[in-house]
Length: 612
Image (cartoon, rainbow, N blue to C red; front, top):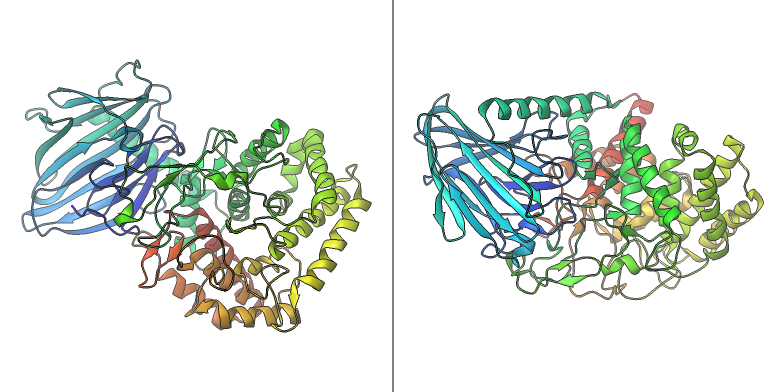
């Protein structure tokens, strides 16, 4: 077992409440329960010694491993090839799990041998509350109960009824050895129950495990079949769609930006943030990507979640919306440093919570309008009350848009007049005017139109640098910013407009390195944070899409296909690509998979138009 496997050396499983990462070593080293934004039960990725993990792997040296998903599912297979035999660990989390107590989450790990004989070693070392909590251990044969602060973890390991597994105590942890021959199976079922007085879950049986596997397998196949996508990259697009769905908190319809916290954007650096929350921007574009694939239910669920936030009006900023919330809509996300954790490969401090929730980012209103205005049925479902909420937001924005803010990248270097924020304010007004007209709804269309036109003129006059022949990051600089790759996507400019093509050329010269794109140059535009950073995979996919829309199809396809080579072994992306090609940042990142889908759709459309 490696102390810190590469960030990308993991697959993702989940049950639409929370999610877990499993390395190709067979180690579950990240899981928060019962929700994405709950304290961790396993977080060895942030501290191997203190974080806790759940490992199942051959008890032999020199095993060769391969990890893959069963096609069009979130069922992960880790295959181990040894001299004595070939074994597998099949990991999944049941969706809509009726076999567990209410509020409980289950991880099922099926062990099986397909050739020869394999002896597996199992080690379960939970560490509750990010490794700060202590727990009591009770062991009874093949069952262990870990009672921690606010959570009880029940582990049951079942195999051959004639040779029951014995879990052995190792301090406050357990381990076991299981020898399986060809055709034999065993299962380790971990049930995480909220509270300390909940009854023990039903004892898993071979039949119940098979039933849970079949139900999970069928669930994901049914979900993927709802996709309308029939383009050139079905496998990668559907894997990205499954990943976005896995990162959505189903009870509320709220997508999270990533399932992890504290993974570094630069090894050894301090850009280590908590992404387990619902960013209005990221979530809006996530549901827009799913909507473009045909997933209307997900968009409607997010619409309802967002409407509840507007109606509640509870924000830490005093604005109608804040940039992020907990998945249940709680606006309080106080940032805390977990000083007892080493951090991934020494990347400290480790932070949970996120003080960026208090920032002003005016672009979020544009992303919301852009995402939800493309589904007329959603506007009908929202009804009159929903329209009044949107109209009130736009009335407020018409009075307040001309302010500096912190911008899309959540820099901590002070507020600026960011060009991207203005472009998205224009988008909000533009979509509002169109919806009011198309739906014949009452609105102050004159005020919205005047605001839209004023924003447009301001961006063209102050956001454009005649010297650089490009649109710039903010009005007081000549630094370029890859967020502006969304300008033609939202229709602010034609993708073949002279000024836009000149901006694209400038970005290629300043921000692009072998098709990989930096979001901006932090040395030229100090962001209040230390150190440098890698290229942003989100921006690299946006660049490929922008090239496609600009008619540069050869370059676009090269950039897209080249970017796909940086995916991990199961098709997942973190936030950044580091200087040696490694994935960095929280993992997987929703925004990257959103941009992948956007780029694939743009390429398909333009290639079809060109008859290629």
